[in-house]
Structure formats: structure tokens, C-alpha cells
Image 1 (cartoon, rainbow, N blue to C red):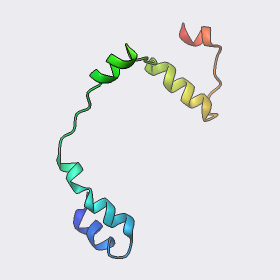
Image 2 (image 1 turned 30 degrees about the horizontal axis):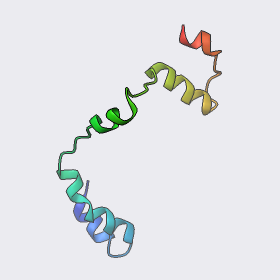
Image 3 (image 1 turned 90 degrees about the vertical axis):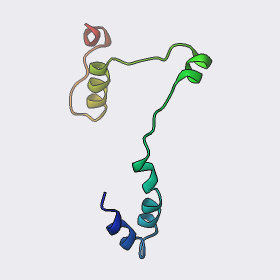
Length: 73
């Protein structure tokens, strides 16, 4: 990220000033842990990658979606 540029642009656009204020989030490693979620709801539901991509493309009207049975085969 061009942080100095964001700071300068932040002088005229509040959005860029807010982005520059969040610079620390880019420098600090983050890790999400789902232990408490799994304790609350049990095993997480997952969608197969191919199925998710196929459905997203169909939702965008880019491909025709086959029947569910045929898509899972």
C-alpha cells in the first residue's frame, strides 16, 4: 500500500484518512480461531469448492446450472 499517498489524499478525502489510520492492521499478523464457534454449533458446514464456484457462476448468469444430482456427480 502506498501509505504516504493515502495520508496526503486523506487531507481532502476522509475515507483515505481512515484507511491510513488502519495501517497497523496491515502490519500485525492476524489469525482466526473457530474453536468457540465449533463448540457452539458443532461441526462447521462446508460447501465443495467446485459446487460453490459453479453456483456462483450460475447466479451471475454466466453458465447454466445443471440439476443438483448431476452437479454432485
